[in-house]
Length: 411
Ligand SMILES: Cc1ncc(COP(=O)(O)O)c(C=O)c1O
Image (cartoon, rainbow, N blue to C red; front, side):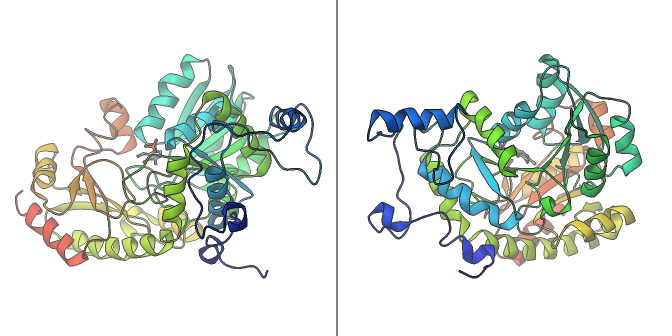
């Protein structure tokens, strides 16, 4: 078959209807365990799964137990790699499951992880509190840092094993320089130490940004967001080179952070509309951004590609992305009371954390998603009391603008 685009590929790749009674779409394989035909087959399945022997050319890993693998996870994993141009994927029970399991697969006590600041609140907690409790050190640079600024943290520190980017950053929308992280990882990697570049691409999502082409080794997603897309599931994904994803899967099996068949099936069901949802959500977001930028009660709008993000940010966006996405942060004139007035006054936008779904969600990062950070950390990361984060959905954009307008009038 000739090479087709991901939007076509996802309708057929990774699923053979003849193995499921001809079912046009995959059934849910709701089973905890899989029956071996013979004891020898069972023995061989474990030899491969536990790495006791290498796989022969005509072999594939057998299904053993749903914490290890399951047809619904595998079908999904085969399909989601298309957009990012990657070799392999692993699905997890949540975005945090993907992030924590993948980090632990590549870090051990004494190692250091260097990360862009800010990152999602849960990731922040993992990096600032949990990893250090296991003697894994962490240090950070501002999301928009230059190569020199990033390199200053890696140079002369032989313990650095992971450079972790979140781009655009939640909630400031700052982009990281992926090629710079790659160059640093290559410069300081040798036979004994390979520095891995991981990137959380949840905010932009898969369609408008392909960080692997710019040098990321592993992409991490909260699949709860655009992949699931309907605010009805929690899941995560790690996507990248086959050998690296294989290592992440070993950690997933032991930590028990695999997804379940029903969730994998639901994400799979959402893939056919992923691109069209993201394109339309982006179209709506652009209209809302135009409205907000002109509004007298708005101090500043943070959205990829806007000139007010600064020249370097615009240049990074142009180089790394093909779209602007549908997540917008904006600062109202005033502080927390003014921000809360807007949040309490909207009718069509739902006051809830999470993002990337078909309905518009609005929240206050400082007291909600990023409330774990200290006041000083928030100031350093640019998370101010007057900041509101918006995830634009599929409602009519004029209704959404009217909703925001009447809410801003309450200030
Ligand atoms: C950028 C980012 N990464 C990771 C996560 C964590 O994902 P999950 O809630 O699926 O564990 C989130 C959740 O909001 C997020 O915004």
